[in-house]
Amino acid sequence: MSRTLYDLAYGRAGDKGNIANLSVIARSPDAYQELKTHLTVERVKAYLGDLAPGRVVRYELDNIEALNFVLYDALDGGATRSLRIDSLGKSLAGALLSMVWE
Amino acid sequence: MTLRIGSAQGFYGDDVARALPMIESGAVDVICFEALSELTLAILQKDKLANPSRGYTFDMNIIARQILPAAYAKKIPLITNGGGLNPLAAADMVRETAAKLGLGGLKIAAVTGDDVLDRLSELQAQGEALSNMDAGEPLAHAANQNFVTANAYLGAAPIVEALQNGADIVITGRVADPCLYLAPIIACHSWAWDDWDKLASGIIAGHLLECTGQVVGGNSLAMLHTLDPRDLPHLGYPIAEVEADGSFVIAKTPNTAGCISIETVKEQLLYEVHDPANYITPDVVADFTTVRLAPDGENRVRVTGVTGKPHPETLKVNLGRLEGFMRELIFTIGYPEAWRKVEWLKAMMDEAWRGLPIQRVEYTYLGMNSLFGSLAPLPPDPLEVVVRVMFTAADQDTLKIAVRRVMANGLSCPPGMSVSGTTVGGEPRYIIGLWAALISRDKIYPETKYFTVD
Image (cartoon, rainbow over all chains, first blue to last red; front, top):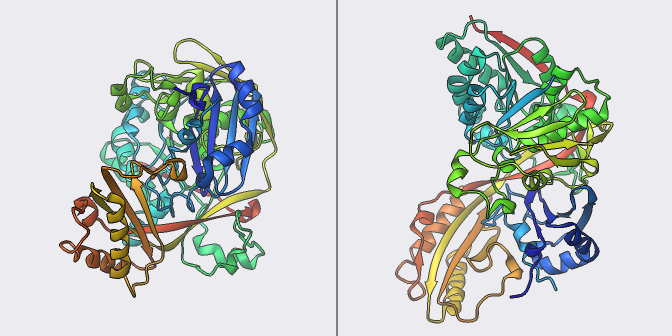
């Protein structure tokens, strides 16, 4: 079975208005260096496709070996407007963790 | 000395009774209850429109009846923003309840001033454009002016003052979530309002506490193979033990289920955070990138190294606007030729709704693409498809007519199709749009009223 990002990291999604944030927390210092180098905004945006229709910003937290991805316009107008079954986007961190990691 | 803050509520509907083991075990000096998500005030507005003496959370009644007597007996102050849109009415209810329970001498503080719905014209006339933070559009230019709530996020100051004045319970409306928790720390440790690193440390303590279960194993991917799922309904809610220098330990109610680890703290630290170096609150801008985490014994994590910067000169205001209604229907479709039948369903509904002012229609297939959208490839010839259709209109009647017309096709539908009975019996739901804006601090006037139980 191929390795996914979930083998290297765990994370949680949060919502604020129409903005989602996905934390990607490395399981080890080596994993963090690998993620920091290779898990770029371009790669995340390309992988998430329709789930990340707007701007994506990446923040690095060396102190806790984690990345934080902020996805603008990603929640179908926000939890109070969204027609999605997961209106808060609670599952979105998992969407990113499903990325196949070579 | 160390201030021990318990957190017994993280949303409207949380189990506030988790405060009881905190009180009984003697593990806390003060307890906070955070009840207001972005949507909660709009929900409370519906209650208040139906009954002007409502508009606060129902949890307030449970707090008054079940928690307050035990807390008052031990002189543990309670702080809550569950006053929602009507902190004064909540205070009135608490006073009546406390009197019936014989809690003579109990002092209640009610903080108002966050609600600016009636001041929108006045504020705009004073030069506050209240422009949408996302789109930049001034409020006056909004085509839809059907605002039902408008609340500024207050900081810790009014709560600090109420505690210093001896309040046994402080009831507020919209206060920025972590500031609810920062307040008792400032009151205890007498921190200066420009001691940014310490204030930021208190904010991060509050941020880690404010989602109760989420830092003790709830919603934790890291704990998926560690926690016993039968513990989830019994998690001991978190406690922060905050030192005068700002450092603190995140711990858990003694002898309760759940777990606190470096992993659970990291997960919650980044929850609903955007730029971690600039976490903006009314009292301070906190920097999460200097935080250091260290184990401090079983189910304890020590947090040090937090830094902060001066707060902005503006406060955030969130306005809620009624934008229409939505309705859901779920259909089940099976083999053979499931996708062809899905296309038939769509065409049938489209035709049935001809002439109706339906605004949006969204189809998803549950278990196939309803969470991950285009990430999930659709199977070519599935055995079953569960179709969820969401549709919206400006008014409820349109949606009710739309459902009736579709249901009239019950015996004239694609072969083998069925509709989920619970969705047929459902009702239209409100669509509340949020309009976030900034406002000058000096335009917001918090006010505190005190009531003492005879």
